[in-house]
Amino acid sequence: MKKVLVIGYVWPEPNSSAAGTHMMSLLTAFKAQDWQVEFATPAQRTEHMVNLDEYGISSQSIALNCDSFDDYVKAYNPDIVMFDRFMMEEQFGWRVDKHCPNAMKILDTEDLQCLRNARHEAHKGEREFNHSDLLSDIAKREIAAILRCDLSLIISSYEMQLLNEVFKVEPSVLHHLPFMVDLSALPEQTKSYEQRQHFMTIGNFRHAPNWDAVLYLQKIWPLIRKQLPQAELHIYGSYPPPKATALNNPKTGFLIKGWADDAYEVMQSARICLAPLRFGAGIKGKLLEAMIMQTPSVTTPIGSEGMHNHLPWPGAITQNAEEFANAAVSIYTNQAEFIAAQKAGNELLHTLYDKAQLNDNLIEKIQLVSQNLSAHRMKNFTGQMLKHHTMRSTQYMSQWIAEKNKKNGEK
Image (cartoon, rainbow, N blue to C red; front, side):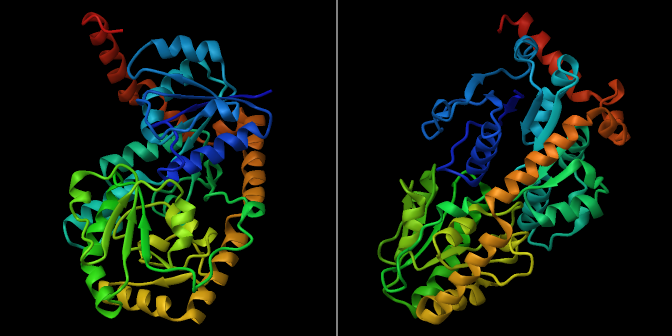
């Protein structure tokens, strides 16, 4: 039985974020192989975290910049270690190398942080994003983490292309893994066009692209409301801050609903999902949920990026506020457009997001690399170079902090 250790950035919250759902897909995929799986994280426990015990997955709290992890990882002695985002590889990767050198290291990027950050900076500067924005300190750290690992999971086809063409990362250390959808569990029937009403959007308010989308909707919504005076926009998401709840305006139909007990139910009750994302990376869980619940979506090129491989979008992809509003109203008021969007979503799910196929491909890749780990690493000289002591600044910083904490009497 293989032993897997997953080092998480946060505790999984599948009802709060797409990242939480994706993490649970990976954990359950490993469990389905009859592998022993443990999830460890330095993060604080949260009210919406999933109960991993119910899935037969053990869990452990670990500390940053602390030698206690060394004893822990030696005792667990994993065959595979997966890091949730590059920051966890920076913090714990060198310790895994030292104490479990034969463990296969996997990096789950979630989305490319350097891409999201570069787009955010361009957006704040009110200018077009270009590839020179990518060449940041965050990019250097993230690409270094990718190269130090034996395999990195990349959620977006666009990001795969970016890593290959811009950063020249060898395809052998990358694996394209979008969100995995269990097609056998798709609802046989969802609410009809006539049974649905209003617009909706959903997303964790702590995620900067989601909050920006809410602010952008303040500009878009009056354009929709002018054409549909009785329509409402229901905005759902976990952890709404006071600045978000302050935007609630029943008079204009701009309603901040906050936490949704059942994201799928609120998705299928709406006629259209709105996702006017102006920056970000990866692929968008809300748009996949819309496809699952047969809810057409209106989004931007950023929102749809890496999600449809040039197949028809289940709704509309628009460039500006006026186009966005007009497309939303058109689908909302035209049943034929609504049904066509539903069919396009179903085709995308079956073509690109089949959990059974994606899961088989992932496990096959992991088995192939782990069975030939030495040869695989020999082909990745850059990764081996980045593990050399002259390039281990994160290790030495962590050790310095650990020693400082000891002197201050901290455990």
